[in-house]
Amino acid sequence: MSEPVRIRDDDHEAITAAQDVLGLPYPEVVHLALTTDILSGSPAQNARRAIQYYHTYVLEQYDAIQDVPVEDITLDSADQAKAGLTIGAQKHEQRLAKQR
Image 1 (cartoon, rainbow, N blue to C red):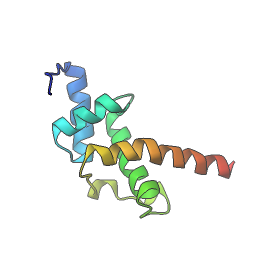
Image 2 (cartoon, rainbow, N blue to C red):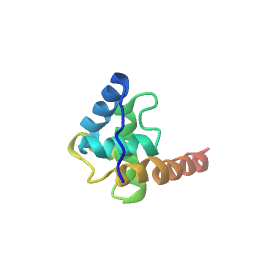
Image 3 (cartoon, rainbow, N blue to C red):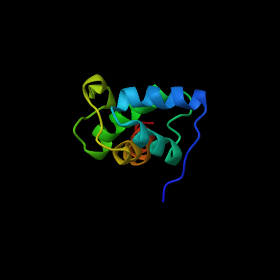
Image 4 (spheres, one colour):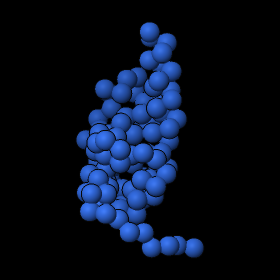
């Protein structure tokens, strides 16, 4: 069952910024915003980080997050971004802890 969602102008701008980076439809980014903290701080930077973490730590296509060509990659679903922001972020923190 769907419910209408009211979005403030500030949130709309943040969702649009994340959407531009992720390449996802607006409703997918709204769903992502409801289930993660992607809109905290810089939504565009968080979206880039989601892509980097997803391709580095979840798919293991790259050895380092700096190698991920974020400008050339979009995601297919909010679930991919969520995996990047959760699983990928955890693995990133573990890697950083091992380096210390």
